[in-house]
Image 1 (cartoon, rainbow over the protein chains, first blue to last red):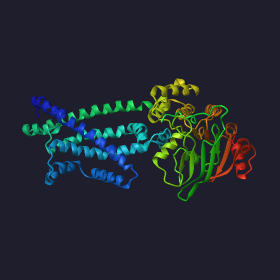
Image 2 (image 1 turned 180 degrees about the vertical axis):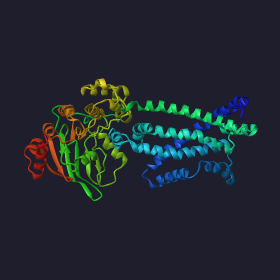
Image 3 (image 1 turned 135 degrees about the vertical axis):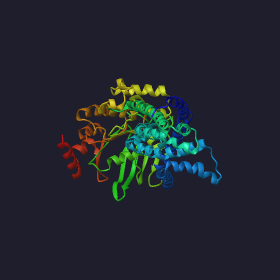
Image 4 (image 1 turned 30 degrees about the vertical axis):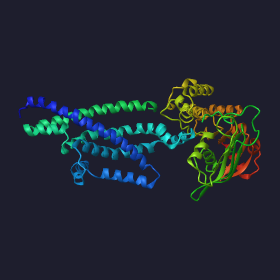
Length: 221
Length: 278
């Protein structure tokens, strides 16, 4: 099979543009919003109030128990029948944020629980309230524990955003699909798309190592 | 909420044992389910005095200590601290009645009166030694940072750790960590220092350093309640020794009496067994 080098070179442009204007901003926005949501849900799950923790438990169960693609479709194609019409981008950000919120909530909850009880007590003995202890003593230690699993969530999210192509968001994979359909060079285009995802994830993995080393500066090795 | 009250910190020399107690505990009781851990505990601690709580594991002595710092909530009984924390001398007492519902505010006021030194140090691993010490004064007591740092440096120098100011806890030995734990408590200028088996987690050769620091604090006039298994140390440092067993106070009195010539058979057995270990 002769390789169409012209096509390979010329298609990189739109694919990388799709990554820069679609995949990456979609990932970042969803991750930041999702993480804030996850912290809230994790704290709700740790609440002694049964109703509050029950709501959080239900949310996590629904998010983890249904496919991300179905969540996307419910929001983009389903909600209009209830009179809620959302554009592709807001739909995608909402769906991915909710998804990250569910998974990361469990990570953060486990990380908070992994901090020894004595740390709460030390916070209390110097006069801190529960929320002050949480903010200044517990969360900084929980953050260190949760970097590896949250990095996994982040890297998964980069790849999951390719699903947004199915609700018409112009991102990396949708651009590859369109060129492939036009040129009929499916193998080449999809491998190109795979390569760009891989490079992004490689960069994120090395970022993870740097962050872990930074956060590990205060623990024995 | 600056800790400028004259009843905080060490007693001025000559003032020890004067007047009414800094801390009065009456009829403290607690059960975990059907397991009764405290029955009718009474305790008075006068300013500048040191009270040692001794007894076998599970006797309830640590629960008493933790109740004083609001880390456990008793089912019944009262805890009263004399004086007030606002500047300008003595004021109304802080009195908590655990038979009724105790508010968050009351627990927070209770914690303001005392500071705990833990068996396992419980230093904040993500903060340097200095940050550990100034965290309470700056974040909770809202004192000026520069002032808190100056105080912290003085205290660290006193326990021989001036050069460890910027170290993280994991870089320190157990004995050094515990001395930082003590400085962290001192920096709050509490009315009462609480020690929960402060040397139990230490290697034997490091115990002396920590006991030495506690002895100095006693000499300086700090009011303290110490849960300990170090009977020789208790005899040396404590004004009063309280022997607990099964959630009850079995015997109490001057250190020399309780530890040298116990009146109760249970105390005799306990003291004999512990002294045998040495």
